[in-house]
Amino acid sequence: MTAEIFNHLWQSTAFTVVCALATLALRKNRAQVRYALWFAASAKFLLPFAVLSRLGTVLGHWLLPADAGRRFTIVIESVGQPIMRTVVPPATRVFGVNASAGSTLSAALPTVILATWLVGTLLLTARWVTQWYQLARVARSARVIAEGREATILRRLEGERRITRHVIVVESESAIEPGVFGWFRPRLLWPRGISAHLDDSQVEAILAHELSHVGRYDNLIAAVQMAVQALFWFHPLVWWIGVRLVDERERACDEDVLVCGSDPDVYAESILTTCRFAIESPLTCVAGVTGADLKRRIETILNHRGATALSLTKRVALSGAAVLALAGPVGIGVLNAPRVQAQAETSRIEERFEVASIKVNDGNDVKRVALLMQPGGRLQATNVPLSMLVRFAYGVQEFQIIGLPEWKDSERFDINAKAERDVPPGQLGAGGPYQKMLQALLADRFKLSAHLEKREMPIYALVAARADGKPGPGLRPSTVDCVALMAERARQGMPPAPGQALQCGFRIGPGQMTGGSMPLSQLATSLSNFVQRVVVDRTGMAGNFDLDLKYTLDQTTMANALGPLKAAAIAGGPSTDVPAGSDAPGLFTALQEQLGLKLESARGAVDVLVVEHVDKPTPD
Image (cartoon, rainbow, N blue to C red; front, side):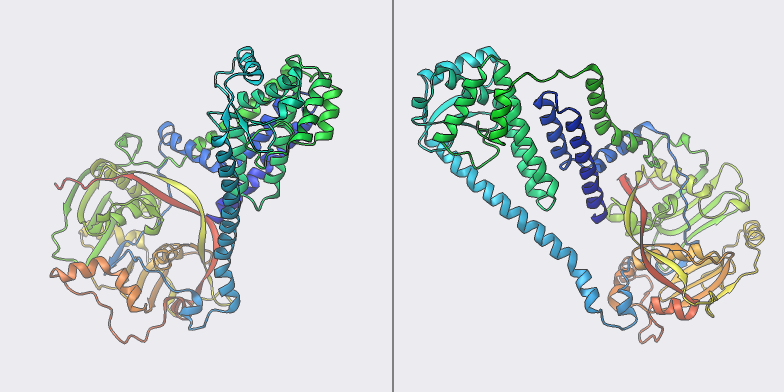
């Protein structure tokens, strides 16, 4: 979220700078054009490009072909609970060290910033709401002027300018200058006694000025700018935009009045008379007649020569820039849409199972959870929940998945599937055909549809803990030929038994991880669910390793991790409680002492899978 806010702020700042440069290029043209540019800069603060880009991503899910080729390493076999939903305490707590004052300050800083922003926003909003309420009370108590010189001139000007919104003139006891109050049902506040100081031509000039505000919905535009200032009060540019908006708004009205035939001397005199008689409105969303730099305005009015019309080149450039500002982020979202949606159109996925049997697990073996990939295009899943299937198919950990149903862990399935063609042993593992075939199976039988989004998140980097880069005693290079071994198993049809030492594979049990001939990238992926962050292998250690890791977690986090299995045990299955009194170290310490590895905090772009729809499958 912090990264998205900073992205939005710098993008809005850059957009404002571009608009400012454009107003300089158009300084000899009509103020109305510059006014529109400043309003665009203001509105940009309320419309992040990320929103438009995500809209494009949604469109891209419908327009672009599927791309399911995502990298992922999954636990091949696990005993106990393979999908740990544990939040490991920070490293300072794991090693038994109290958090430093600096860490406490860093943790509290986001709260302080948020509180400061909220206080500023509430104060500004309260101030403007109070002023608005006072002006509304003045408008309600004012007497409606239904006839007379002001009403007659106003009705005539409305007809000449084809103003469809009927403006009501009310006589105000307040000393506030003539101004339009209201966004959609405008009321013109006319101070009592000011007409005695103005002749007909001057009254007409002031009324023409106010009708120009009404025709452009200037009060509504000013209210939008006030909202921007309330939300982004800390950003100096939003206040500068506010000043420029008022300045160009009043210049645009001046140009309209003069273009419609008012004499410059008469118009300037009417503004000066109004200034001597009344005070300016305290709110920019009550459009008056005396705003902006008055001295400069009077000089411009008296020296009025007419603004230069926009050339065809400038019109095309402005139109193209407007289209690019809106359509550009949408187009980027469409082109970059992570189209990995596994929907009913599985014909787009080349790899698919020829036959597949899905049954609800009968609960007789709640302790064993296995997902086995075998040469020959066979996949065997035992007591596997939906969350694990989705993780394997789309290359994400459970904390990266949004939108799974409540039964994602409570409902468990046994799956036996075979592809319509053999899968060579070299294609086993992460990113291979099994992922694509399982995506097709989830789409067909579970009616699953989902898409991936990139989000900036904290991650962990798995690195060597020792200066010489040597592994610990629990991490040993492997010499086993797993391709040959798995091919032999496939011919025999004999998966490894529970508890059997793994020569090729990976097993997670309560307080223990064991692996045979596995890359460290697979260990990093499996650690992700323990630390609730994506873990990236940056050890630089190539090849496959045998590992044995023993650790402990506190009882609260372990109970949360084993929640689904505990529920099954209560129903009659075997218990999976962690042995009491274990003297094994915490996970972070165990990684360093036993494997010679450690986790370092970092930040990176992380895939987040958004599940749009999923159903329970029909057993067969």
